[in-house]
Length: 55
Image 1 (cartoon, one colour):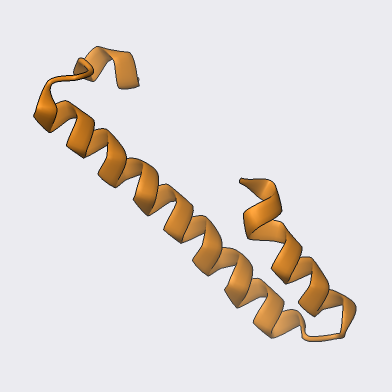
Image 2: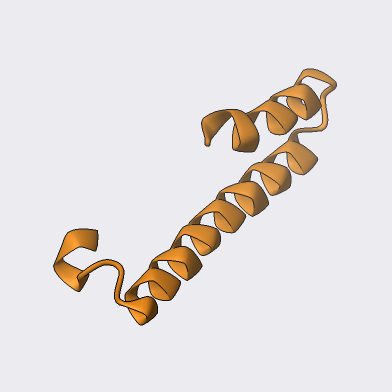
C-alpha cells in the first residue's frame, strides 16, 4: 500500500513538485481506503464475514 501511494509522490517531490506530490499522495490513500471499505461492505452483504471480524 505504501509503495502504491508513496512512490509517485516521492518521484514528484524529487522534481520539486511538492503540491502535486501532496495531491497524488492524498488521492492514492483515499482510493485505497475507499476500495477497502467497498470490499468490506461487499463481503458483509454476501455473508462471508461477520461485522465483528472487521473490527
